[in-house]
Image 1 (spheres, rainbow, N blue to C red):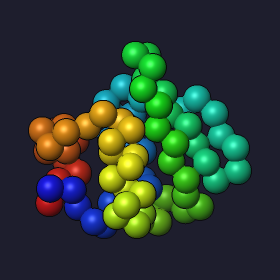
Image 2: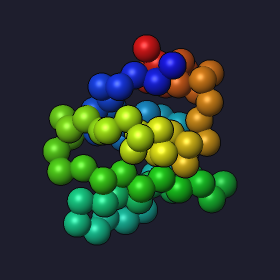
Image 3: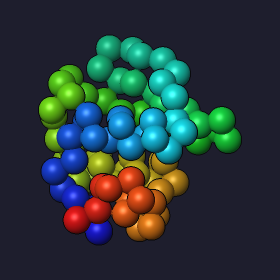
Image 4: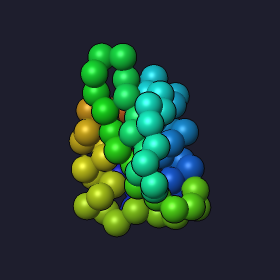
Length: 77
């Protein structure tokens, strides 16, 4: 189960560990892309900021992560 209090720092770290790389930045939106074509847009103003649960779920879905991936990346509850 996805934790509700994931910070931008934790999410960006998990994306990087999973092979995503920062592709571009426009304002507060950062686009991360994986070599296989998956992309995730993460919008935050501070690395300590947490996300609303709907936004967080959408980013996790965009990354193609399932429950096993959340455990592997330490983003589970």
